[in-house]
Every structure is written in C-alpha cells, then in structure tokens.
Length: 442
Image (cartoon, rainbow, N blue to C red; front, side):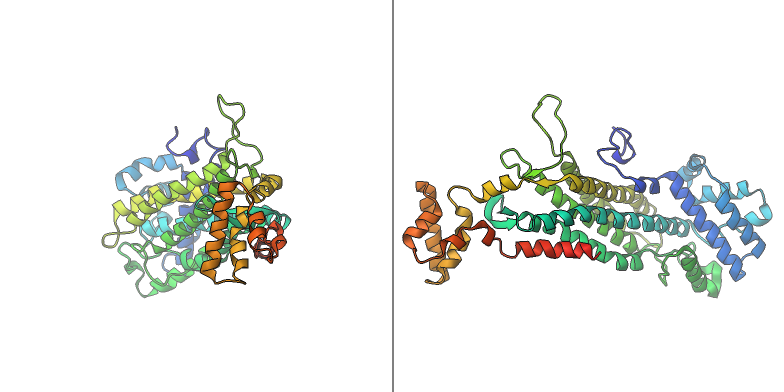
C-alpha cells in the first residue's frame, strides 16, 4: 500500500482528489513559494526597499525559472525547511548576483511558506465550494421529487414515526448549505499574508513594515492580518475545522445510506455497488463506506493538528512539522469526500415501494405516537400515553393491528386520519421543499 491513498495509483478511484491533488504536490508548493518571493521583491522595489531594477529582474525570474523540488531535498533535510534551499537555488539559477542578493530581503522561511500555503488553501476552498454545490444540486432534485414520499424515521435504530424521503435529503443537505454560508467569513478571517521576519518583529523593514505587509496582501489578494501570526496557527485550524465539518456532514450521509441499503431494509438504490471476490449476489456500498472512513481519518488528523498548534516561543520546529504531516491529508480527505458524495448523489434513488411497505407494517405501530396525541382530546397526556402503550403491547401480543384495537376502544376517533401515512409526516414535506428553495437560491 502507498504511504498515502491520495498519492496511490491503486486507490485513485476509491479516494479521488481531483484538482485538489495537484495543490498538494511538491511542484505546487515550489511554484507558490516562488510566486511569493517574486511578489515580495516586486512590492519592495515599488517601495524603494530594494533597487527597482533588481526587483523587476527577481519578479520576472520567479515567474520564469523552474526549480526541481528534488534538487531541494538535501538542503531541506539539513535545514528542516525548504526555503533556504529554494532561495539558494533561485539565486544560482538567476545568474545575476548583483540582483540575486536582494532575493528574500528581510523575510524568513515561515513568511514564504505560510503565505504560499494560503495561496493554495484559497484555491482549495474555491474547489470545495464548487464541490458542495455539485453535491447539493442532485439533492435538490431528490428533495423536490420526494417531498411527500413517506418513509419510516428511525431513532436508536428503531422505527419511530413517519417522515418523508425528501425531508431525509434535507436533513443531509442543510449542513452543507451552512458550510457554504460560512465561507465568506472564513476566507476573510483566515486567508492572510505573513510578512514578519525572523522573530515576528519585521525588524529589517523598520517603520515601513506594516505598509509592506499591506501591499503584499493586496498584491497576493490575501488579507492583511495586521500582526504576526507565526506562532498562532488559528487561521490554519479554522480552515481545517471547516474541512472537518465537510467530512462529518458527508459521513452522516454515508452512514445513513449504508443502513438504508442493508439487506432486509433496501430502501435506497445506490446506483450499483462494489462486488465481492466470492459472493455473486453482493453490491457493497463502497462510496458511502469511503465517506465514513474519510471522516474517521479526519478526526484523528484534527487531533494531530491541534497538538501542533501548541508552539513554543516564536517558532517551534517540531509543532510546525506536525502541521505539515496532518494538514495536507485533511485537505485531500475533504476534497475526496466531496468528489465521492457528488458521484453518489447523482445516482442515488429511493425505493418508494419498499419505504411504503415499511410504513404500512401490519401492526401499524408506526402510528402509535399520532394515536397517543389524538387520545389527548379525551384524557390527559400521561393517561393518553399509557393507553396507547397498552394498545401497542396488545397488538404485539395478539397480532391484531393497532387501528382495529383503537377502533374497538375509541370509536369516536378519526382513525382514517391517524393511520394515513400521507397525513402523519408533520412538516416533513415542507422541510424538503424549503431545503430545495435554499439550494436554488445559492
């Protein structure tokens, strides 16, 4: 097995990452860091911090000179960070020492790495936004089409009362809409530049440090944090938390689909499943299972990332390394889950006939709550509950349907309404349609 399923040719279809996979490659990291270095020189030249002709040369060279990530491995292993090797290789490749001396002027490795990381995370969030919409689009169709398709709701794994399949879809989808609604504030608060120098004081820039940081933020289309954040990993944690919530919301869908597709229940058609090496009849819920597995992974990685956020002094190598180990996997796990969920939703179909049979189970116990509330017209709530429970026990013991027993003991009740699945779904149809409207408004 490969070190990561996201880098594996063997598992590429089980855990697909799409465009996000390209963001977390050595080549993408080097390109992003070179963009930051080039932009830093350009802004410094405009401000007169370094010679303008050198700034122009550095900026153009940063856009044009390709650096081989493998060529930086030795220096990275020695230094613990990749920027010293990158700067040295860049200066050498420029073949212009009179300009090369101004590369990386006043910056520190973390400024370049964190700013470059934010450039890639900005792209990731854009892809995740598109991914959420791709999941929600077929969900809207399902919710509208099945707003009034009766389905048994389950609590503690047991039949509870009636809902609709459209309402079930809305239950899955509303958290995804909330994630989309959180994105503007998340971007504004977390996608920020870092220009703080070796110890977070930006001493090399003197009184113009804040101006430089602001100009860098504008040039890179990132936010200006107005402070140093080398040791404050809150921006990274907030993005990772949002991605973790993506995984959790999609895992909820996966768990429900696994249960609904189980042998003996079969309330949904997953659009085909995985085959067994020996059992011809099986269609395993592969995509749904992958959604759950990715959430399991994300929860463990979140703990590692949280631990890495506790940093000593102005920079902590061990804590920072832990972030590098966990964050890419969190990002790719969420990206993979979004791809799988969109694919699953596009082929998901409810089996309305199977749902109807479950709702119309012979003893009609699914309507016990509705009966207990109807009895409240003639007695207090505790007595009504006791009476309904007694009738349920009798139905189970005798095999006589609950409606017949209720008709015997309470002939004045409107039993047709109480035992009509289409009239006992509460606001489930409305919830399904309201969700569809929310998706349409996105």
